[in-house]
Image (cartoon, rainbow over all chains, first blue to last red; front, side, top):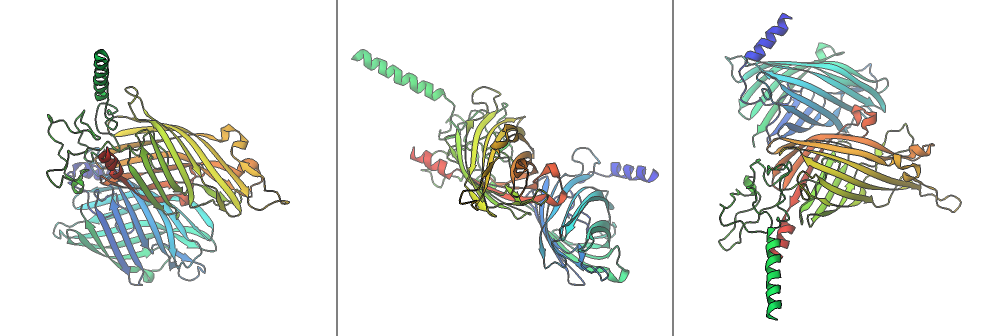
Length: 246
Length: 352
């Protein structure tokens, strides 16, 4: 209770932000920050296994459209072996309000839906994953908080799993002595697609740093670990984000 | 003779005076006295046009300052004249979109306006919708739709039939034209060409009546009713006779009539939030129950329309094809680009 009151006091005491920060996701967790109208964003990433990520997004005012190709979802036909990353093409639509839009101290809020439109050389037949989430983000100066709930649904080989709710949580720390650097951590859930037994959900934890190289570009370095995988299977990734202004 | 000439002169002058008192075709009064409609592409920043300013083919009053239009690159709608000999600037009437996201509105395209909307979605749908406004009272269009779906058995996952080509004609009365507070009303008819797919010939037709009303300058509501019909027939012959045809109208009017509606709001000058609920036919080829063979399924869409330029809008959002049997995996993210052009309208005005 005390912790909740503390966070509430911090939120109310926080100065109104001039504009929402950039970035539609921490590492995996979506944020409630929306691109300004007419702005565009791009992300390119690769991990130490060579799995790549590419995201392009466009700001529509109070919404954002996003198209991406990522390997966050894992699949397996023989799940005694380590599941393989599935390279999926996905699109997302995010609709929301910026922080302080309705009330001073209110967080930014976003309702997002993401759907699969393509699978490239999948290790499992007919993989699909969709999720709908509501997330709140607030910039408190030194820290930025993100919290939400995600409804995830997936299918593999024609087996559909009903949508299940999971929490989303992320924290960004911006030490004042390092104005260009931030420490990030997030916790999300992603589907694991078992071609024999169907889809299940597993957590995905990310910890890393972000360096604001330019006003329009950031570079991130992170380690991500998954439920059901030992520490040695954790991936190290590097990612570059760039944004344009209208 | 002299008396007759006087009467003719008086008649001509009287007619001219009456004609002069008519509002310009495109210069419809705003719905609520505020001049910026929700889909007004001509005023992207929400800056109201001067009340009573002529909008179509009528020179601006010499007693009013000329409208300061910065040109299309800066969000305006017309290029500045290239030389001093160019005539007075022609101001375009407000652009009100004929569709929310998937359902028709009670608004029509202005006369001579060309409209083209091209869309893709994550379900693999690719559609195009091209229309032209006819005399401010009607609209003709040809489109491909991906809303019609098929399945073999009731338990199967439906897949879309595309391209499914339709032609449409809509006619109506613009908002506040007949009396103050009157909603925009259109009566529309859409009919498909016969489509042969998976061993079946299918057709659809839809009659819609819809009313649209502004709720202030930045919001509008659309409510309508639709009468659907559809037919399907196996292409294989039975005993050298055509296979029997199954129709939607063969199972009563209650299966054909549906209500639909939409809402739009503009919280930012260039961005609108859109929500609508419509219906689309679903063919089940091997269903045993006759009533299951053609069904109307509700479709919910929500999204945002963003005005990139006066002639170009981007729309994106989410569409759930069968909201009555909601499954998150069926949700589709769509993106579409809409172009509008007054070129034909301007050319016609020039010829006049």
